[in-house]
Image 1 (cartoon, rainbow, N blue to C red):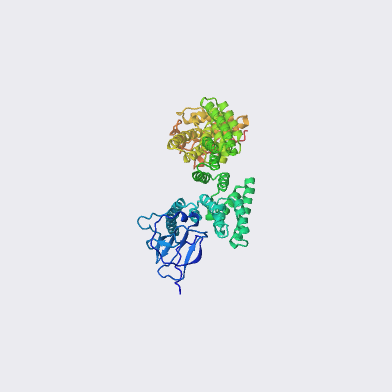
Image 2 (cartoon, rainbow, N blue to C red; image 1 turned 90 degrees about the horizontal axis):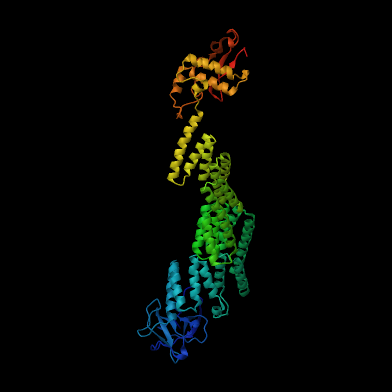
Length: 610
């Protein structure tokens, strides 16, 4: 009874068949240099698992499909690997090896490249099982260099590359592995289904769905009814539907739905990662459309990093810069893309448009520096008209135009332009600052202070922030002055006037500005308000403490001195005007304090004499 076959040491991802051959006693080792008649055939390398310790009638041998192979082989005897070579009589000679792995032959017998390649492959398999994929790739690469005719090394390396999500080089390996040069050595002369399915996975991950469908069609033609192939066809159909939906939404510029579709693609493709340059480019466009600038910028940078000399990757990086208003960066990346592909139309068109805008913008800047603000405004408008849909560029150009309008003291127009900018970007520093300065000129101090404070939150530097804080302080002083009323000046008396002089001045001004006598009602109310403050010793003393050149913000001007005692505020017009009011002092009217929009206290005159 023969011994059972020894356990195979061949990795599970290698394609081998098992046959039986008669076992012969090992002969004395021969020279490692084969005879002319036994020159090794690289494509027909075979691996034997021979148990020579118990010579039975038959032992198991593992081999790939070969024809009349007379080349060197690897044999495992009593748990040890050894190299074997045929002798002139066809007998097999063995060199003593080290247990567990291919080993060096006896001194004086150098290893062949094929044997060394198998060693590297075995080491690569160990690293692959340990999930040390970079190390596995390096070892498989060494095996390929030693024996470039062995397809197993290519497929193993492709598997390791796919684990690293490097589908581009993995696809190259799989395309070579299933090429006729290798597949003709298969038992039936065609590529294995496993290799074709691995090729399809690479194609799908790279977004090459059309090529993937072609490969699946060829697979099912060669292996009709293959379950894995049928499943891949269904999966591919779903991906194609999603892709069609994305393309439709791109045409509509429905960026939310584009992102939704791309996220779905990302979940369904191999590894859950976008690899296709085209799909990544679509996502960059959609992120820009949603103004998610940081994400778009990061994705485009990664795209260029992974495809350094790819014109499409450089174009998408340029596109992000263009949509952010960075014209110089756009021009640089478009030029680089055209160096890689001089016929790349999209890059050429974007370059031409960017240069046109840049030229007009620079002409405007030159005119602005020369204080030719009218020309500057004209050039900025010309630049913005080239691509009015680019909001980032429009904001930059309109901001420059608003500054030119402010310099020309066309402040109301400057405020309107800045307000339009802030509808697009409510944190735009220059627009906030320019609008605030224009509002100061228009005496809109409260609004100006609010804009200055908001701009300070978004100041690009500490220097800018310090300048804004200084402007805020000055504007607050102007605001206080605008609310300050010199009650002495309104009544036409000096600051040292006596109570009688103040009363006489009030009587005179009231007669002049009384509405029933054809006077101005607002002026009449202002006169009453001033008299209210000055005729009361307490409020007059508080008013005298205010510096007219720097009114305190805490001081309540213009009727801000509240009165708790209404009796003190009642003014008997007969006492002031005598017979002029109500005749002979009888029936004279009196002032009654009343709250209105002109201060905390104003007086309305009710007399019978008018």
